[in-house]
Each structure stands twice: as C-alpha cells, then as structure tokens.
Length: 342
Ligand code: MG
Image 1 (cartoon, rainbow, N blue to C red):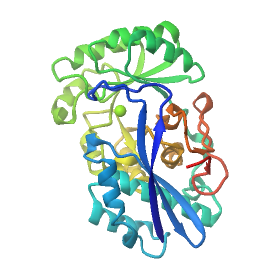
Image 2: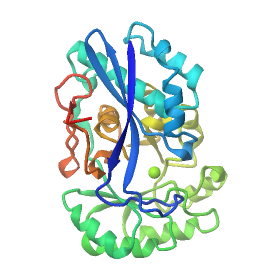
Image 3: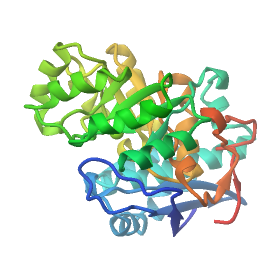
C-alpha cells in the first residue's frame, strides 16, 4: 500500500471561538488529507490534530512518515494494522484516525459498497446533526443564528462570563429551536452548578463538558443535581475512558480524531450502550472526508454533531450534504465522496 498526504488550508465562513481557546478570530484551519493507494484504487482519510490532545500538524506528519511500512500488503487486515499503529504512534490518534478512514474508504471502493452498508447499518436511522454557533458578541451570535435558519438543532458554545447574553441572543431569533450547549471546560467546580441552572432557563436539551476532566470527581455531584443531562467530551477521549463516565455523565461524545477512527469508535459505542450511556458523534473543524467517516456510524448513535464541513467556505470534497441538518449516507462506495479539488 502506498501512503501519501498533504496539508490543506481551510477557510471558515465565520470566525470560530470556544471556551479555553485564546480569543483569536480563527478564520483558517489546516488539516492533513491522507491518501492510501492499493491496486489502482484510492482511499481518503483526514487528520485534524488539536493541541489540546497534544497533537499538531508537525507531530501528525512525523507520525505519517513512519506509517507506510506499518500498513502491510492487505488493506482488509484493519485490526492488525491498528495494532501496529497503536504500538508505534499510539499518541497520535488523529493520524491513526486518518489511516483508519482511508482504509475504510478504500475497502468500500474495492467491495463496491458504502461503508455504512459494509457495517450492516440502516442510513435512515441516523439523527439530524446540530449546527454549531461559536462564541462571539451577542449581536454577531444573533446574526449567525439567523443565518443558520435551515438547521433545526443548534449547539451553542458557552463557558464564558457572558453565557446568559449569548443564549438570550440565540433565543431572540430562535425561540423554539432545540438547543444544546457546550461549555468546553469553561466552568469551575465552584461555579458550574449555578451556571448550569442559568443556562437551562433557556431550555437546553443537554450540556456538554461543564468542567475540566481533572475535576472528574466533582462531576458526580453536578450530575446528582439533575439540572440537565450531561455529556462527556474532553473527559471521554478513548475507549478506556468510557467506564469512568458512568455516574458522572449521562452520555459521551465520540470523535474519531480523539479515539483513532471508525474501529475504536465502534467499540466505544458498544461499551457505552452496555453501560447505559447516551452517545453523540462529534467532530473537529474538518472537511467532508473526516466528517463522512464519522457519519457512517450515524445510524448507531442518539445524537449527531457533525457540522465541521458545514462551517467551511471551501470544502474540497462533496457528497455528504447536510442541508437542514440531514447528512446524506449515499449509495456510492466507500465514504461516498467525490473530489472537488483537493
Ligand atoms: Mg465539545
């Protein structure tokens, strides 16, 4: 198998800010598009490394430089390939995710079927995705909310001293929409309960990651207060984290770039189900390649937050759609995408 990759700069439609990240108006983002070629076919994957998880474009590229000999000759042996990757580059989950996605795309193309069909899933079971509104001034948030009119579910980034003003701005233009909020660790064990009580006054379906993972003990008390269902994102990175979420959270957020791709995500889904946890699939700001890999698992989960490609002005692939929050799991082989100029 031949492995190649390149950096791709992406442009966002709007500046995108979240709690705990410096308030620079992030209008650009760079990812790695990864290509595996085998017997005349090409599979695409994407690495969207984030510094919060100790990864960068440089570390991902350094890891990719070591990967080709680890792939072997047979793309169908995904489990073996994963074992070798985790052994050699285990701290680079975004890179492993890219290779996992490219292998699934390649195998789907080789079999002539979409990945969701290969996994035995029913595409119509996938829930609608939410659309994310990043942190901004209230008037900008109101404008963004208005522009997001086609999306019935919004995810609002909070975790700031201005959370009420943010939610007031959203509700002023979207009084009836389903809202979810993500604090991205922006609250503290001391103020989280009060902040949670404030945000639920705006009728939110659930709250994502109120406080930082190092305060996981305090999470149990927050959950016991039963203010709203709580979801673990930063507190649930890999398979090994799922069990610890029981009693602290009501659900988990699985992201392929955190856990290392479709294979580990499938195992997390099954473990979470067995433990009675709800499941949301999330994403980074990334192209349709990364999002389509996650979307293949959509029929297995309760909630989708797969809007990374919808935030872009220049997605280099097409085929996934997303109008009105409905992602398309089409009948095309592999991840079902076509290149628009990558
Ligand atoms: Mg989150």
